[in-house]
Length: 115
Length: 114
Image (spheres, each protein chain N blue to C red):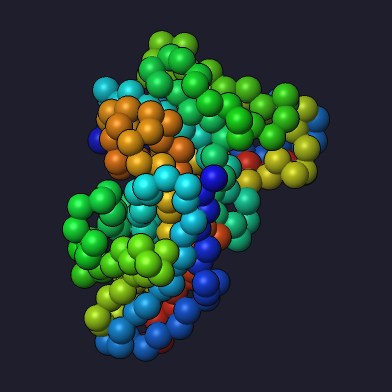
């Protein structure tokens, strides 16, 4: 079985300050891990993915995440928040190298940017 | 189109009514998925197709839910005798390869059962 836990349901940061969205995973297999973003009335968009290559993964819009096996974590960070980053963020896990591509989502973290 | 297209975007159904939700995946994508996203929750897996074959339907909540993809492209999710707990956003996603690592999502259909 596999699952992800997003440790914060809501995070508020001021514009221009760092962002940290926390995610822990549990997987019986070597996992693939993803972060997706969901803006209001828009589809889910892939921010970045980890698939057993480099443990530090860079994504779009200045986001990055580090896979830490010893801590079973995959936290999402950005050095400087922008107003357009306000959205819902989902940490996602998938069994790597399996034919069934089912994604297991966390419950989401709502990011609010304070002007 | 360039992305995954879902229709209708919004659907209001009276309790007990049958509904059909459509998904047009990205052309050539082998894999197609349906997810259900309740208000304030993350999406939850419903079912998975590889071309026209439904390989996993373990997430369908009851036998009122039925999905098909007869020609390996467009898919329809049907819900019979809708109930209030079926109210949610239904998301469709597709990916290029069986072992592909990225799924592209549509904007979803928001179903409200009254």
